[in-house]
Length: 115
Length: 112
Image 1: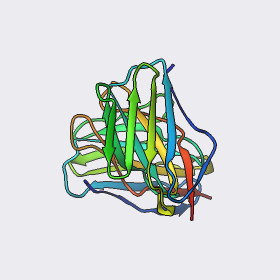
Image 2 (image 1 turned 120 degrees about the vertical axis):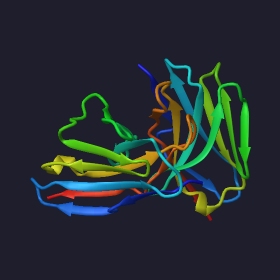
Image 3 (image 1 turned 30 degrees about the vertical axis):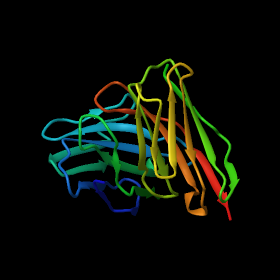
Image 4 (image 1 turned 30 degrees about the horizontal axis):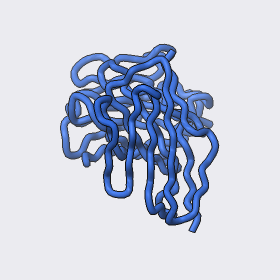
């Protein structure tokens, strides 16, 4: 199957700093990528849909100025958590799909801890 | 509102037995349903997709059924192995730009 790489896998930062997470599709082009957040023993929560060359579409309740998404190429999307606070600590996962419908290929996830 | 329910309690079975996991949904008619596996601290891995006009799908030791009347999917792992221990997630298409609605997942432990 297709490979999606996510980096960094773990990051610890101080409150008030910004953190960037990268998501790359290694062997296919992804016009759309999805960013999820997952709390322990909770379901995957879709945060936003990242569209190559255009603005991301955010889900209700997700602050677009807090979670900046950039999808500058067909193989790279980035999520920047700005002015991070302890409540932003979570597991962030990106995914992409090759076709119109079908399976999603997920990155390895990024564990963010804000002190 | 759309809702997905999976067995909330962990499932413990003996190696070699068949594991059966359930996914029920309400207030929705998905065009397809998917099953994923997630290991601790990792992203989900796709296993199987079944469309609304398909009753059953198989892949090696895995089998998925989809009953649109009962609004239920069953996921079976035959001849289970300890390596099958993981959380299994059910996801339905939201009918909108490939978005998926996710269940909470069921934790499976296969004991040697």
